[in-house]
Every structure is written in structure tokens, then in C-alpha cells.
Length: 374
Image 1 (cartoon, one colour):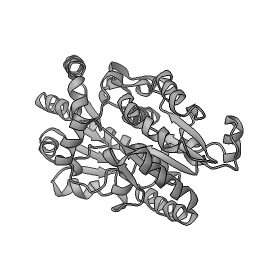
Image 2 (image 1 turned 120 degrees about the vertical axis):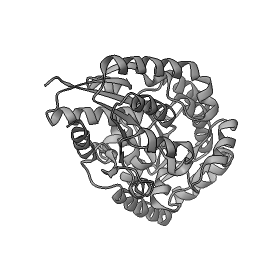
Image 3 (image 1 turned 120 degrees about the horizontal axis):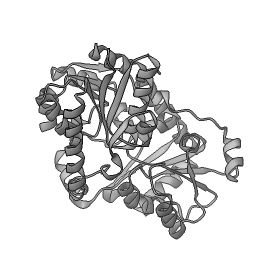
């Protein structure tokens, strides 16, 4: 039998990591396949041929997407041509809904099987994306516990496998070892800063985070930098606003697990912090146009995945205009000096982690891919 052809589309760092782990699991299971599509360095290192790198395509917000339309159109065109040439046995779409649902339509129109792994948050946005799921996606693999019931109620073929980050999140160093390696004092509170994985996010969010802690006394600061970001541009912002911040790459889970408090851009990192049970404050900002549109469309009372999974606010959110250095500084000081509140939040985060399912999500997702191929 010839090797299976698998087309994968992942348009951001988290999807790139989960897609790479999915392909590695398929190899471990003995599947003979060739993979091609859109992704990043992780998918490339797993053996996938990149038609386009997501570096020029990963954006958040409506206005931001408009500015990247030429690059997005080129990527769509190149991927479509590759699909017609390679004739994949399955198309695996990972999050990234604006692009992936449009590509799902092209794949379905030409008779290719489509699997959506880590589905977009249409339970928050709704609208045309619900109809697109019905019309263009054969099967869904979801990673949040409430999503299975949601999609089943829409009449879709859906499987809940648990969240794949449970297989990834692991702290390798103790606090003492971490501090020794970075020249920090283990007896002084550590504030971890995670400003996001996209350049646009960091540009909007990081200055606010740095200004919010600049006047705090008796604290140390560690910034966990996403490996796909340009370190020099982040160092420039840090040098201007808070030079004593220690920047680390490749030690994100150590920074999360060894911190007393995290300042986190809303996204998958909030679930990673929940798995490590580290108290956090969530911050997010987009352009004014994107914010106004989102206010009209978003239907959930919370923006962070931690609070959405919990069904209530277990960690504070400072979104858009509420995300000011003064407000954040006050909240940080209160949380740092209120041990009872931090312990209560830690207990809530452990409950959220338990709701994400057990380890082995990637293997369960890979078995569904093999099932569809057979």
C-alpha cells in the first residue's frame, strides 16, 4: 500500500506543537504516511513538508487580519494547489478558524475527508461558523469537556479526547534549581510574565504588564518568551521599561511552575498555568476596531479558557480598557500579599485541570485519524 497523504493546517504556535505531536504519535503507531501543509518549526521538525510557514499568517483581531489578507490569500492558493496535486487521504485542521473553515469548504467540494482537531470556539462566536462545521467537516475531535455536548446538540460527529497539553506540561526544575540557574533569590516572590505567542499580542500587552509591576517592592520578574518571537524586539521593550526582568526561552513551564504569581495573556497558556496550579491574573488587548466587533459577537461572560472551563471566574480578567497599569498593580499587590486567596485560587485551578481529562489525548486523537484513513 502507498503511504497515506495527510494535509495538516496549523496557523499558530500551539496548533503547530499539537500537530507535531499528533504526527509523531502516528509514526509511533506504525502508520506509513507523508504530511504536508501549513505549520511552523515544530511540524517541520516532525517531518512535515511546509507549503507555507505560519509566521506571516498568525494574527489576532479583525483589523489585524485585514492587514495580512495578501499573505493569507497566497497561502490559501498555494495550499489549494498542493491539495489538488497531492490528493490527501485526510485533511487535518487545527484551530485557526478564519482560515481553516474556508479551506474546509474547498476540501469538501473536492471530496476530501476533513477532521477538525482542537475546534474553534464557535460556542463563543457562533454565526456562520456553526453552519460551516455542518457543511464542510466530517468529524470533530474536541479537547474541552463541555464542547462534546455542544457539538452533539448541533448534530455533529464529535469525540472528546482530553486536552493534549496534559501530555506536554511538565516542570523539570525545582524552585531552588530554577533560581540558581537564573541568579534569582528563592526566598523572594517571583512574578512570571507571559505576554503571548504572537508579535502583535506582545506589542500591545507587554508594556502594560511591565508598567504594572515597575513600582512593586521585593519582587523578581521572569519573562517566558515564545520561541517563535523575535527576542531582540522584546529585549528592547524590557530595556526601556523594566531592565531587571530576566528573559528565558525554552523554560516556560519552569517559569510558570516556580512563580508565585503569573501575568498571562489570554490563551492556551492559561490552561498550562492551571495544570501547574500557579495563581494568575489574565490580561488581553486587541485593536479598538477588533474590540468593538468582538463586543458585538462574543457571547460568553469570560474570555479566558480557565474561567470558561470552570464556568465562573476563578482568576481575574483585565481586558482591553480595564487592563491599565494602575488597576493591574493594585490587583497584583493584593494577590501577592493575600496567601488565603492564592491558596483558594490554587485549589480551583487544580479542579479545572482535572476537568481537562487524563493524559494520552494525543494518542486518542491519532487513533481517530487512523480510523478515518481505514
